[in-house]
Image (cartoon, rainbow, N blue to C red; front, side, top):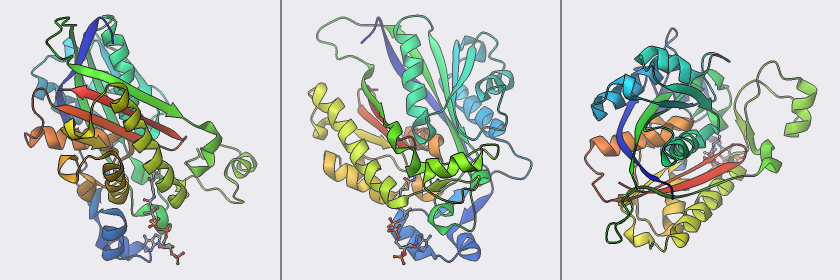
Length: 337
Ligand SMILES: CC(C)(COP(=O)(O)OP(=O)(O)OC[C@H]1O[C@@H](n2cnc3c(N)ncnc32)[C@H](O)[C@@H]1OP(=O)(O)O)[C@@H](O)C(=O)NCCC(=O)NCCS
């Protein structure tokens, strides 16, 4: 695709220590463990402590990835942080991470594609690396979603948790030998539909309430995450399925040849439906939903890091990433590891 191949060379992660179990949810809203497990696949999620920040877990995940890569922070040329729940409106989380890890040679900024944020930041970073502008990129996704949850709304509060995940991307000169398959990022598909902003959203407390009411078709809008669960479910299954198929078809790759699917972790039933429709079985799917819930942008790198550390990702494996988000936003990427 470019002058340089772009590979993921290491991953990292960090979740807060505090855990919110399904039993904790039962104490807050009219729900139960059985409903949550069978309808979503979630058993527990992690929550930032009172004095803990998104910046803290983002820096910890970044350090974890840097250690795994065996590189110095000064080798990093580019930092992109994906988040919609960072502690400060500015400076960007990327700059806070740069400060926290001492990556003094990097340029840093943020990307907001909500739950698809890590995928979008990774593709964005890869563009700089494929052209040769930069050699090493740190992509970090970190969310403190539990701070934007209405814990009286059982439709959404049971789904979300806090966490951070990171990956190091490295550019290597493109190997042009015909007998060598291309390594790293092979192809991607990104898309959005701004006509459907009302399906899921989270307003700032400063947004005019009359305007929010028009935008959402609801009389009363609170500064918490709100979603039409069923509409989101359907759009997510169709959006991710179609996106994966577009990439695989374009690259003439059969689903059976895919070694691993790393999907956004919102609901196990969504992931299973995509697997069935695309033809990638559950044993080839990276999951961390049961223990972390939906951590928005952090979900994909958390699943990737878990699989990486379990030794389930091998040299030459074909890995498909796919994500879906409020916006609506969707995307997929195909990597050869
Ligand atoms: C939210 C979600 C888990 C709801 O599951 P569902 O199977 O679609 O459930 P429904 O919305 O159809 O509701 C079925 C019933 O369960 C109830 N219910 C909803 N949440 C419940 C809970 N936590 N505990 C018990 N019952 C619950 C509903 O009130 C409804 O009851 P009713 O039939 O009496 O009206 C599911 O739609 C989902 O995961 N959607 C996608 C979410 C997503 O991707 N979000 C990302 C947003 S950025």
